[in-house]
Image 1 (cartoon, one colour):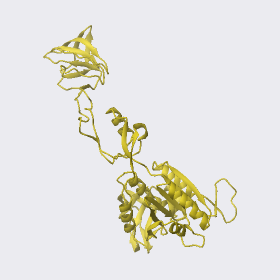
Image 2: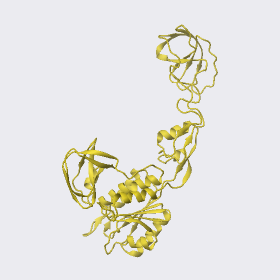
Image 3: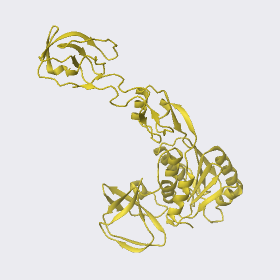
Image 4: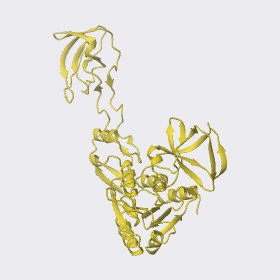
Length: 389
């Protein structure tokens, strides 16, 4: 059995980004840039009007002669003389001979005569060329997660494709003869299967969609056969159950028979002690405990950050923050604990129903509180380490 930090260190050294690939921008959402992007143009590529109004060649008076009009997209090249103006619309190119744009609400027009209500200073309502990004400089850094704004920004720079890290394909393997699909009659001694859907939804919530589900019966040959297929087909395999030391827990023996290298097995934590992480070539295998709350805890602590790192994100295995505990709490445990908790601003409450089989409190939780092992008391107001869900 190893310490939590040792397990985290092993994964940090193991989880490196997958292959790079070029994708069209409309396929790039929630993927991570595999290379820094440099702007091929100035943005904006010309002096640009920030308002609907009039572009002015400034002079000492408040009266101007309107000599034309420029719409967004026009390439008209006006050479304005002092005291002349052109009507202009938001996004249109401001003539080099104009020093400012006055918004339409601040003028009066009579025919081609324009009268300003106030003086205008140079550069008013004019976006300078390259004010957002200068040609040849960094537009977006390697390692950035592409959100809708980033996709739009790249499109505005003229990109149609981008180099990103491949997201991992994931196989979920569910074990257990005691499991019955939801919606079916429940015989005595059986339980409804919940971990598969729970893990699928947890993955979807983290934007991992390439997921395949596998079901095995509790016998060695079935377990080995399905695991071999899942490992061959996926970058990461997440196994639920069958990793403990019971007579019908075949996962560990099957993985060994398939020449999976064990990176670690059993972690000094509660819940989630019987966690196994292994590797075969470039494939990673997580064998999670079968108890639902323990399985989900291990997913958040170990699987989620690993998947993000494989995808190119700069994810860590560390606690996100320290928050104020709003009540007293007594610790008496030989293992480090991760407790389901409710975070409200800077304050955190440890919930009831902490058993590894109980999901009802997990449904209310938005954080896990980490408490080191030992026998000690925590008093209201003390700060505790928190992992955000």
